[in-house]
Image (cartoon, rainbow, N blue to C red; front, side, top):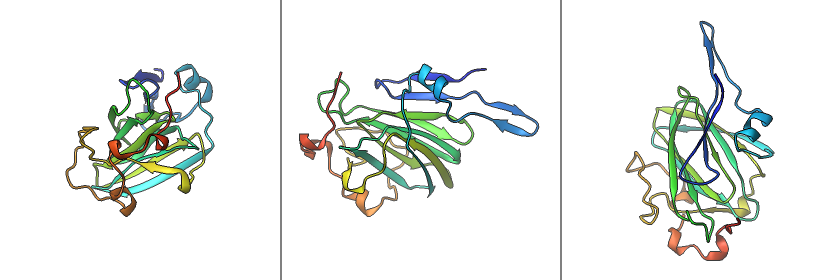
Length: 187
């Protein structure tokens, strides 16, 4: 049994299926092991860990930082989410495209979202505890967002009327974001 790194339709966005060792006592898994994850395609230095607790129907996102971009390695400790990554890099061949994956305490999957991508999730269980590692520090002044239900993105959320923060309700449509407020695509 070994950790699997699964490529998605967005270059750099990876689904991680860690090796989970189960027995009658429970289970054990490594949520991060630098050498193994670098070999799997996640060559990141993480500087901050976050824990988010949310109730059913909550949608957080879609967020990105411009001058202090954050790569994120996301996993769920308990509960279930539909997790999304959107390519926000102006000039990218996959600009505006998205990938979604169900992460849960049961399936133990992780999603790696590189810098330059927006991230968000909606809660599908009664409650959820989400953990994520970040490659840069959170900077409220640098936070940007895009509207969760933007028709230009066409995200197929498993929810119609989510519970949003006031800030997320005000996120702009992708076509209304000035180019200077978008990350730049670099080969």
